[in-house]
Image (cartoon, rainbow, N blue to C red):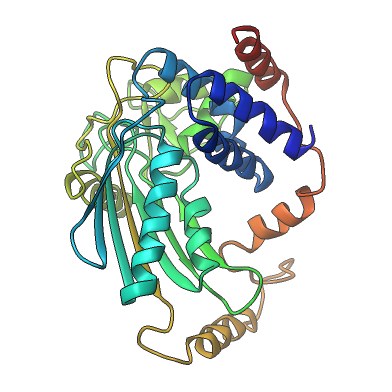
Length: 336
């Protein structure tokens, strides 16, 4: 389906679910972007889930978002259980605004929900020549090192910086070996997941996606990954006023209340310390790319290059709608 046609369709669905047109457009653009950068696990596969949560009254389609200015640099936002896209859109724009004024912008958000890809928001700041860090927590998926039960989410970490070129450096990664969205898609389509990424409820390695969802996901780098997940839980949950330590509800399966996810945006002027930052970052990337390459490696890529190339390639193409997603969209439209 052509991307603009798809955006209009998604916007229509969200408007019919009582979002304002402005907020519906924000959601539609984020979901379509995820498809264009090759991250379908954060795209249309979640559309029905968001609508289900609105229908179950655990997402507030007409939130009264409170923005508290703590200083010229720091802002605290109570998202009033809005859909995460809207809360994060306000948050990153406020962080950018603060950074432009003072050199650094710090925004904490509570009472939000799942907001899609962290890199989507980081890229908005990078386009303004700002360095960005983004943190958000998630429902239990990873067991703390030494524990038998999952408690931490896949808790993505995102770092982004201008590169003095068209392609920004955007590292957007979860602290798990595989993001949970990919496991959900595999479970829905009956596909296997890679080895070494999850354990079943008995603590045994599994490639069965459904058993992985019921069991435990493995963190990157063993106990170090567990430590990073804990760090993100503190920064985006404890620090902001969001839920933490396993209290974030699963968006697909738990409709007993809002998620109250926390987000943290840290945005800085790239030339805050060194006025020749652009020259220095260009030199940094050039030196690394000139290193001797392993056999079969054509180019040493920095984080964000692959997604940019994929986006550029897919931007003019049709977005492929799978049978499952087509069924979801038809179901949602039939209820309007």
